[in-house]
Image (cartoon, rainbow, N blue to C red; front, side, top):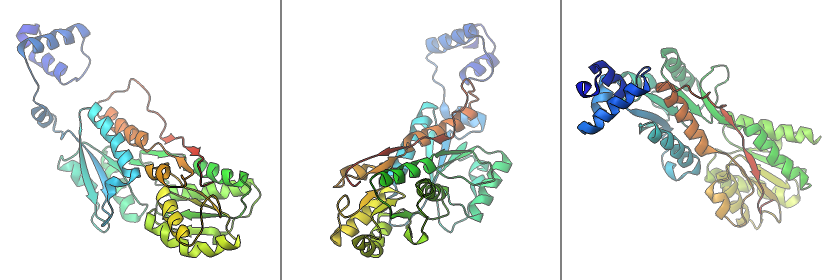
Length: 333
């Protein structure tokens, strides 16, 4: 091929592996020679020569009895990651993180299983901070999605959950609601803190005191929302609660189902707003008001940032890591 193109073997290698600056005329000659000879690069051999796996890892929480991939949040983010991986010629390697297992993320890189890694469902606990700090210290490329670790400086793609929560609560306030309960997720997630901050800020903006007794704790599952309905049915009947803002749609739908069994209907006896704009929010009856979050774009952006850096494509500046959200009004409010 080098002889046909009139260049050195080193130049052929640089063109085929897209390494270093090459004159366009030279590149065209090499590619034309490859076409004439019917050359097809062996991807496995290329990866071995570069000491790369060709995989982008996606680390997910292992949750027993939960169908993770049917969950809107994870399926959307994974689809976005997959879109970028395909565009850059990478495969996805899914790695499940056991709740109490060792977080030896560095080993995945040292054993050449992955070239970069996207973290989903990370919790702000000491073990996770230590494992991520080790990755950063060793210089391995990784990106968190929908989770921040304050003070660490980890690469993160997030959404503006403070503003999203403020918009949800403002909407309820505009409907004349004044006793708005908040169903939040675990505090180990930065998005839970963001949503609580937005809830408090919207109340303060309207001159309404924050009341801790109106804040309920779930775990982002539909079951946790359903179980909270037993505690909230009485206050809704007496008017102590006239609206509910839930930190995700799954908890909102679980709550709605439980309250319906108690004879309470959203939009009639109380107003309800969820968060995520999941498929479920559009098909329940009545349809759920919610906050749309660009999970697909978050996954796509996280993977693209890593793979752009891997291939040193710096033609365009990296986009901001915090994406906008938007309120969607439907029948429950």
